[in-house]
Amino acid sequence: MAMRTTKRPDLSVDFAGIRLKNPVLTASGTFGYGEEYREIVDLNRLGGVIVKGVSFKPITGNPPPRIWETPSGMLNAIGLENPGVEVFLREKLPYLRQFDTAVIVNVFGYSLEDYVAVTERLDGVPGIAGLEVNISCPNVKAGGIVFGTNVMSSFELLSTLRKKTKLPLIAKLSPNVTDIAEFARAAADAGCDGLSLVNTLLGMAIDVRSRKPRLANCTGGLSGPAIRPVAVRMVWQAARAVRLPIIGMGGIMTAEDALEFVLAGASAVAVGTANFVEPAATLAVIDGIEAFLAQEGVASLRELVGQVRTS
Amino acid sequence: MPSTRVHEALVVENRDAGRGYYRIVLRAPALAAQARPGHFVMLRVSENRDPLLARPFGIASVRSARDLDLYYRVVGRGTALLTAVKKGAELAVHGPLGNGFPAPAKGEMPLLVAGGSGFPPLLFFAAQHGIRARLFAGSRDKACLPPAAAMQAFRAMVQAVHYATEDGSRGTCGFVTDALAAYLARPAGGPRRPVIYACGPHPMLAAVSSLAADRGVTCYVSVEERMACGLGVCMGCSVAVKAGGYRRVCKEGPVFDAREIDWGTGRTGR
Image (cartoon, rainbow over all chains, first blue to last red; front, side, top):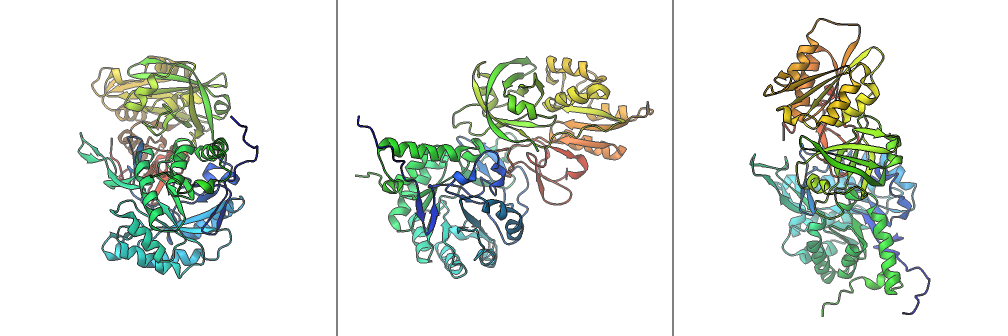
């Protein structure tokens, strides 16, 4: 076998105008605000950090039990507990800004006004590379229907937010829909710059002896390797429907898992639940992708995006 | 706060300790050097994806400044898999985690209250502060008490051991709180002020806390809760507090002043 050149493969990505040194990000809600991993992960090595969801006002979250382990996965119903945007800006962002990594802020609300308020507050703040909008919240005013599972509400929400910020806007899509392509198109039509998918799959577990749900909230979001094939399929479908760049996520534990998403059409990936299990998982994924490219003689990761051979 | 890192720990021993428990000894010098009573670790029971999550275990003791002793009860698939791990294997472990127990002040007499499988952190506490301590060990029946080796270690380190079993098969018949209440009701036997350190299932901690509040005794509880990360990130292990909202067992805990916890909210048992 011929020796490969020693030139290191190019892992950099231009994602919707955000320069990432490599394609590996942290999925929102699985990496806190970065500081929690201070002694485990050198944030300078990450392509970016997508922080835990931030709302306009603080949210205390759901009563326990909040998590339950399932086959190759876990259910969670944390209730989007967070300290609110002002505390985020004052106490969390300054830490993250010390590092050479893209900071993407995940935002959400329970009404259109909430979403607008947090988006406007973050617009123009130095040190923020982009916003990821979690559209999987129930719209309290519309009787609790979930923004992200209704195409019209998704479009209205995202097009409203589009007018409120100059930052790259990334829509985080819910997998709990029949046709993901429809939602990808709604996000593109609303003027979004990129997509993140998937969020967690809605699930439930029951203790058969007490006959009670395992989670106080009854249902929760399923994450981990169990959902990966569903997520890869949805990234593939969304990539075929729109030209927006995609951050692929859902059960990524290894570089090979991440590369599946890239071949399906993701330009970048996010590591989520793996951060709980193997706190340094992100670093292993980055190293693994680089090693894979070198081994395969691929000069740049960009050459692999969407290159699944379907025929 | 200790420095939290991921360690590859060598399994020095992993054997049946009796009464449904195993004791596993892990060689992880950097971790052991920082471990204090009340700290815990997150241990991967297998490298496979199922079961996925690491398990939290309270540190029972540190030996020769390099080995950690953990006790675990075989309660599910994760702990059953852990029993098959052989001496010489390596396991990923991160820690030490959590805040740990406050050291007793001069003139205080620690009353250690262990329920269910909550004894390991108290064993570590006894190794450092056992000289004036008393242990109250409670369980359903004598077969569910901590394993013999653990009880032997306690007896060597504390001043006295009180047993309480619900069926009366060992010690006082009734809950561990009954035995504790009887002790607190005795005529004051000295100048030392009692301080309670409790670890066990949620209902027991609630009962001990209520007793401590009635008697005006300071009480620290080490809370058990399911957790995914142990790093303060997943927010899965939260307990309700009287001040409103929640605190993370892995980060602000696992040891809390019992008066902080809102015992009426959330889980009432498992």
